[in-house]
Image (tube, rainbow, N blue to C red; front, side, top):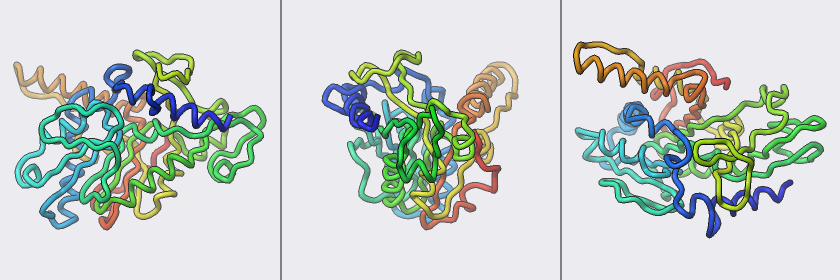
Amino acid sequence: MRDSEGAWRAALYGPDGFFTRGSVPADHFRTAPLIGSELAEALLVLLDRVDFALGRPARVDFVDVGAGGGELSAAVRGLASGSLGRRLRVTAVDVGPVRDLPGVAWERSLPGSVVGLLVGHEWLDAIPCPVVEWPCDDPWLARWWPLRPGWRAEIGAPRDAAWADAVSRVRGAALAIDYGHVRADRAAGRYPSGTFAAYRGGRQVEPAFDGSCDLTAHVALDACGAAAGGDRVLVSQRDALAALGLTAVAGGSGMAWLESLARSGRVAELRDPAGLGAFGWLLHGVGVPVGDLLPPLPPWRP
């Protein structure tokens, strides 16, 4: 099934591909940037820490890779203020049609260099890779996903290469946020059928390579981290958001209480250990110690 990578790529990014034709996450599934501005708030805290560690350069970047409809980019641009806001350059990277968002520059490929924070939010899961079955002799599988009879897997080497390339362009920090898995769970047989799946209109559907649905698979974030190397941590979204000051607490009275209650609900959804809170955050410090960006946290285990 190695040829599945080419069919998968054409179905998403070919002339009539799912993303090429303009489909965005908001049309098909609920992601963290669609919930509210809270993820952007937390990422601005992280960006401020990166900015401080870099010595407050004259220009600081926020690069949103796999930006979709640009909701995260727009929220970061809209919330940034003060010195950081004046020096901030926001770039959204995606293959789909450009959307007019104030203060956001659109690109179809990664910038040559990034001074600040690069974020791949649910980007790596949309990078096609070979879907294979046992027996398959591949060095990546031998290291990261040893197969047994009857098992299926995705060879994550294309994601590893993409992430290593992205990190290599950065001075500051690079963050991948995605659903995924680690070697211990893969080797133990937690995913005997692999994770390749398709979604359309908010529902999981039978995979089709005709551009009619989003094709995706969980990300081997531990392998991506090793491929990019350097100073890095892999933690849960739930723990990372708390470390950046995002916690679900309601208070006040009257309308203020209602607003804080709504915000508390949105934060709770982002940190839900049975949902988005179980996402992995793979954070690389490039010229910036990761310990300056996040305190020590438990290692991620989905």
